[in-house]
Length: 309
Image (cartoon, rainbow, N blue to C red; front, side, top):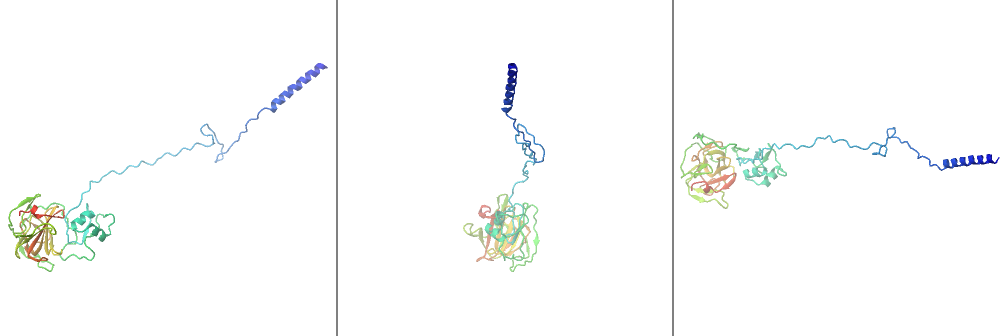
């Protein structure tokens, strides 16, 4: 009987021990199943513990910027001769506010003001005013620029007889047979052969307010071309110069002959050095004289540097 009680007590202790083990065993952590935005089951990885695929930015497929190749041939300023009596100028390649103003003998501020130019911006083919509003070019003068693109070829110049009737109120053009007149020696400067424009004495030298030389003489005395070239202006539309002739010798040099009694050539005519182009007078002057100017790229120069004196 005692033996049976001992066995029964042992089984009870064994059951109690097993119950205690079950009671104190730590339960497993619950597992939660999340859903992706699309409703599917999220997957996890060591690199992404948040349940979504890692963000990968899209590849940059835009082509790299390549600047345009520089195809410009370089800037070449335009200093071709113009008709200084013109009211307008058509912009050509190489023109700038600076060189247009320089050739027409006006200020840059005037050119900008007359044409509402901002930041010196002009474009090819644009027509600009080179005289103030209300200016009217004299009859017989050109209203557009005259451009010489190649040097004057003097080897083919021939003596011609020209008969012209002027529309100006003075006797600026008469019937004349061209002739060559000697006024002294010849001097070669800058590839051009020069001679004095008349045989008269010097009344006023270059300098100060004088942009040239005033030669004295008698009314009707011969005035000749100081060098071979092309007549680009013949008229009386420029105040202070009277009956005026301008001869272009090449792209750099031109000469002007003012206060003449009469003009014996016309615009566009080729003349030779020593050829008579006018007769001395006193139009727009207080005395009989020839006002002579020599210009380099539009700027007055001392004629004594070029002419035999």
